[in-house]
Every structure is written in structure tokens, then in C-alpha cells.
Image 1 (cartoon, rainbow, N blue to C red):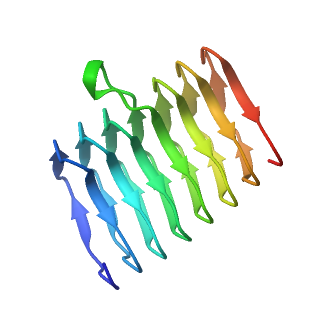
Image 2: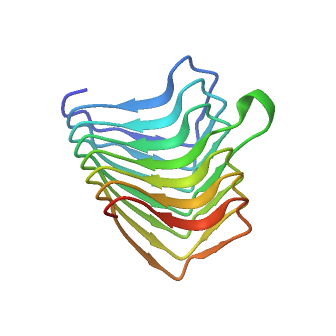
Image 3: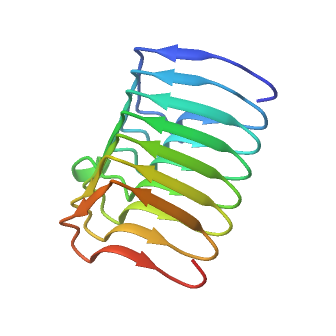
Length: 170
């Protein structure tokens, strides 16, 4: 919390009761090549005015979502794999962006979630560049509320319900 700055590299973060990594207020961490798996809530929860860079990480089987950005947070996600997991460790959502948060995703694979792979809602914004969004049991990309999204060069396919759905005023 506060203005904390940290660099977390090559860690295994798992089996936490709520969030593998929780960021609040104005935290500004950098997460590089971490394995964030099987947490009971979120893999990474970014809230408030936090700014976070996530690179080369595996987020898998976190019960709530792999990464959730809320408040007015800003998150960059690069070269990551966000997978749904299996059995009791199946993520409902890969990347969740809400409130006024802004997330930019580049060269990532987001796949196999029980709900949607990517979910943007409220007044949030989302940029997806390159990468793959596939094999969700629900939708690949869901936009709801006044979420603003831009996709460039992303391969979206083989999602069970639909590949992209925009609802409300998105």
C-alpha cells in the first residue's frame, strides 16, 4: 500500500487465501517471470492508483481471475500466459478490467477460462496487441458498460459462446 515500489522476479506465488499479489493505493511494482498459480481469489489484484508492469509471467488457476485491475489503476501486461487451469483451480476470467482502470496487453496468450478470457466493464479501457485469446467456455472478449477497447493483430477464436461481445454502451 502507499507508494511502495518493488521488483519481483522469478518467484512462485501460490495457494493464497485471497490474492497472490495485491496492490493498492499508489504501489508501482514490476513483476517479471513469476509463476502466480492456484490462489483462491486473484492472481494479481491491482487497485486504487497503482501502476504495475507484468512481463513474462504465468497466471494460472486463480479462482477469481488471473489479473484484475480496478479503481483508476494502470497495468501493462507483456509476454504472459494467462490460463484457466483445471478442476477446483479453474479461473472464471483471465483478465478483468473494471471501474476506471486501463490495461494494455501485448503478445500474451489468454486461454481456457470458465467464463470469459477477457472482460472489460464500467468506464475502463483495454488495449490488446498481438497474442491469442482462445478456448474460453464462455466468450473470448466481453465488453460491458462504457468500456473502451482496441484490438490490433490479436487472434481470437475457438471460444464456446462467442469470440467478441459488446453490451450496453461499449
